[in-house]
Image (tube, rainbow, N blue to C red; front, side, top):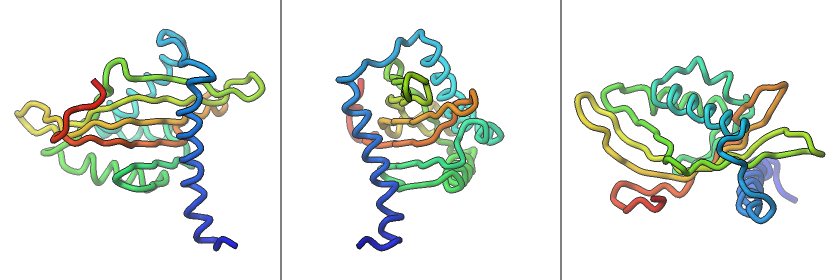
Amino acid sequence: MESIALRAFLFPMKKAFYTLFTVCTMGAAQAQIATDSELYQTLKAKDSVLFEEVFNKCHFNLLHDLIDPNLEFFHDQGGLQNYDQFVKAVKENICSNPEVKPIRKLVEGSLSVFPLYDEGKLYGAIQMGVHDFYLQRPEMPLQFTSEAKFIHTWLLEEGTWKLYTVLSFDHVSKKQEPKYR
């Protein structure tokens, strides 16, 4: 019999595995939606707010409207974080030092969106892409540091899209040639 602590540890890992498995196998079931569709444009705009406004410009007041309180953030180098841990990490690690500020940019053309339906009703979407990370320093050009893949699960709740699950993985450092271009 599994202990409660082991089950508490394994459940999020199983959930992440099933999400990743679903995304990796869904290509055979359906292609991504058109880039000019309303859903694609909506989630591309949400991605822009999350990263351009919150991550790059540190406008934390926007997080509440973007992220589900049950957020699970899986990072291949930083581990698992819940909502509170994620917000704290952004404030302390991303936005604490304006002299050396991490910046995230979506790799043009890498974004894909796959709708999720329950008996024909849209309830969520999976968003996948590649992003580059840079360091911004005063009076210096952006310095490329790494790139990575991401998978976001967005849920539609009462007409509002909320980020529910984040997988950030396959980070490639500046010492390696970028894989995705």
